[in-house]
Structures are given as structure tokens and as C-alpha cells.
Length: 288
Image 1 (cartoon, rainbow, N blue to C red):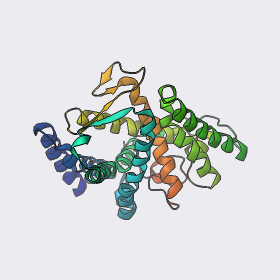
Image 2 (cartoon, one colour; image 1 turned 30 degrees about the horizontal axis):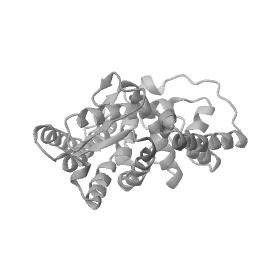
Image 3 (cartoon, one colour; image 1 turned 180 degrees about the horizontal axis):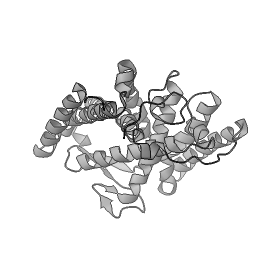
Image 4 (spheres, rainbow, N blue to C red; image 1 turned 120 degrees about the vertical axis):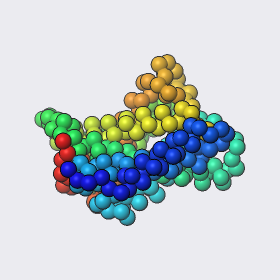
């Protein structure tokens, strides 16, 4: 077992202090506290991964890890743009900010999304129970198959835009099916290609990682201000925090979309690839 890095203790302090202030103070405060709280979460996760495996996203490349924060900003703004059609979530307190201030504070908060999900996925991947999931026989997908899946993604996007009250779930699928098949055709990391080969572990690992992040996002959002709330057709029952229970299912394909987006725009050596069995980029040491 490796030591628990100093950055982990820094992360614990950031999480504890920001959480206490965010839930304890009155008035506008979350726009200032969201980033340090989630930066702390990211650092704690990186430390846990390092302790279990002897490596982590941060330990392998500080520059690449920092780049994930910058990449998160336009990635989440993409989903904000898609939400313009579905209106599945809205922000309370938005009216308190000028357009410029809202953009800057939001961008800072959005910057932690990919590091949080990828780091948590790597933590999930460190457990033998997950890494030892059995493979299936797989299927053959030629170039034609990937092009069909790519076209399916554009169809999903068109249906979501044209009929958002019916096809709003495609917000969490369309981007994946548009980009991941193209990644496969370009020789970049592709979850569909890995799954077609018989290995579903990357899909499972990323999905669990995003669900864990989703739990903390929704829990910490509960007593925040500004905060987000949901207006999801047909699903406004059985809430866990502000989120309808069924809505948590969207976190799973959301993680796949993040992977596809990062794979599409980064150079070879995708930061998370080494943490995913079957990714072809090598695997870190296993924890218990």
C-alpha cells in the first residue's frame, strides 16, 4: 500500500471548509465555494487512487491533468447549449449576476467536471471486483457499422431538438454516438470499439464513476445558493435531493460522452486511458 499524498490532505481541508461554509452561510455564496469544494474532491480522489495503485491521473502528468480542467469548460457549455432545447435544469440565483460575471463564475465551476468523473472512474477501476468482470464474445463492427452508429447520433440530436419533451434523454446519448464511432474510425480511444471486442469494463467503470460524482453533485447542491433545480417531463417523482431518481441514469451515458469528447480533441495518450482495462494504454497496479 502506498502513502497518502499531501495533495489528498489539502483536498480534505478544501472539501471540509467549503462544505461547511456553503451549507452554513446565508445568501449568495456557492458561486465562490463550488470550485474549491470540487477541487478538493478531485485532489482527495487522486490521493486515494495513488494510495491504492501507485499512480493516478495527476501523478502521471500534471500538465495533462491541469488540461482536463480547461477542457471541462467548453465541454460543459456544450451541454448547457443542448439544455437550451430541453430546459431540463435551470439555475436559481442566475438573475443576480451580469452576463459576464455569470459566464466567468460558471466556467470556473464547470472546470471540475471532467477531472472529477475521470478521477473517480480511475478509483473505481482500482477495485479487483470491477476489473475482473467477465468479458463477452463481442461483435464485429466494420467501418460501415461505425458510420451507421455515427448517423444514429445525429438522428438522436435532431429528434431531441425537434421534440424535446419526448426525446430529452438523447441529450445524454447523442454526443456519444456522434463522436465515439468517429474516434474508432480515426484510431483514437473508442468505448464502442472496446465493447464490441468483448470488454464492457470501461463502460461500467466510467458509469459508476459518474454516478458517484452525481451523488455528491446533487447532495452538495441541496443547500447551495445559487443552485440548480430540475424540470424533467414524466419523471418528477421519487426525488433524491433535487434530482428525480430516474434522472440519475443520465449520469452513466454522460460519462461516456465525456470520454468521447476528450478522445476526440486530445493527442494520443488520453489521460484516463491507462486506468481503463481494455483501453490499450496499459493498466496501473491494482488495489484490493
